[in-house]
Image (tube, rainbow, N blue to C red; front, side, top):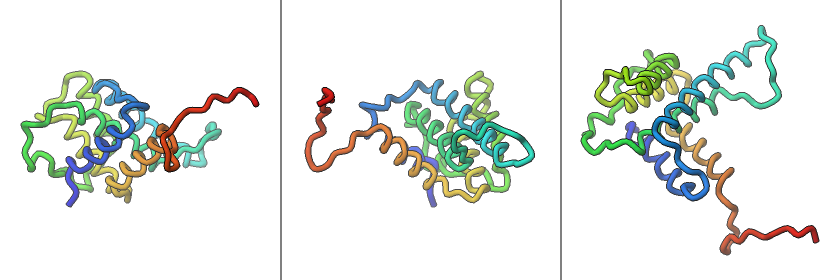
Length: 172
């Protein structure tokens, strides 16, 4: 069974690869970005509803937005001291039936406002995130791997068997 720790490690490994070109935001900024991505998930849901006339000038994917939310939660956890946690703390405990995007947003807002009452509120938010992902039919680990791959493809230089050297285009 995949643990919450495994999800964090997927993102940690990717963040290490992209560290020089894609800096890690602060914990607070990661939480804010996660809240933003969760809201973009809701926006993508609304855009799928033909009842509403919405600006559809770019792709809006519920899957990608929810994946990016989890990516940012994991990016926050990477920076938090979790050395006191044991294996049981990393086990998912939120039943899939209780997966709810609004609970994820609430938990994240509680972290930012200091109103979180859980011992490990950011990890609790990740647990709620993964429960909702599974409820939607997504594999949380796949979501995170896809997001990591997309960010790496976007931010890392392409290397073709030799050292990458930027070439100045002088118009010739």
